[in-house]
Image (cartoon, rainbow, N blue to C red; front, side, top):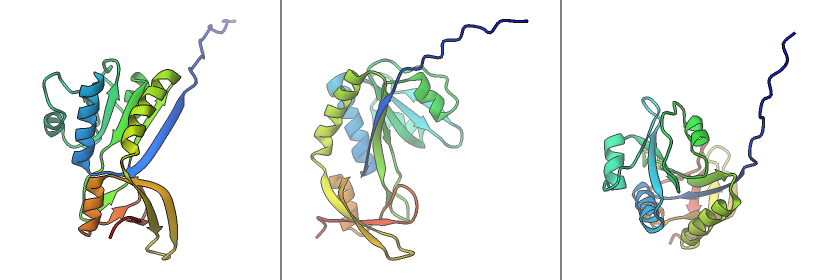
Length: 193
C-alpha cells in the first residue's frame, strides 16, 4: 500500500486591514502614484473585464498612462517587491503577490459613486504596520462622518467613522449620490453644507 507523501501544510498566518471610504478615482490614482514615488514601491494594475489581466506599471510611465493603456482598471496594487505575473484570477494574483496593498477603483456612474477601500493581507507584521502608518496619514486628512439611508425602508443610521476624500466631497456637493459598496444604501456626508 502506498505511503502518504510528506506535505508541507504550513501557511503563514495572515493579518489584514480594510479601510472603506468614498474617494474619487483620479484622487486614488494620484495617491498611489505619490506613494510609489515617495516610498520606492512597485505598482501593478488589474482589470477584471472583459477578461482578467494584471500588469506592472513600467518605470518611467505614469500610473494614469498605464491605466489608460490597460483600461478598464478596477484595482491598483502596491508592493515593496516586484510583482509575479501570470495569474488568471484576482485571488490568484494576490496569492502570488502577498504583502500587497490594494486600492479599489470605483467608476463614477449615472447612479453615483460607490464606496471604495484600501486593504492589505500580510504575514509580515512589520510590513503591515509600515503600510498602515502610510495609509493612516492619508486617512486622517479625510472628511469624517455620514448618514446611511436605505431608500427601500427609509431607515437611517449614523456612520460616524465613515471617511471621504475632498474629491468625493465635491462630487456630493454637486449632487452626485454616494452609494454603499454594495446594495442600495445612500450616504450623506455629515460636513456637507
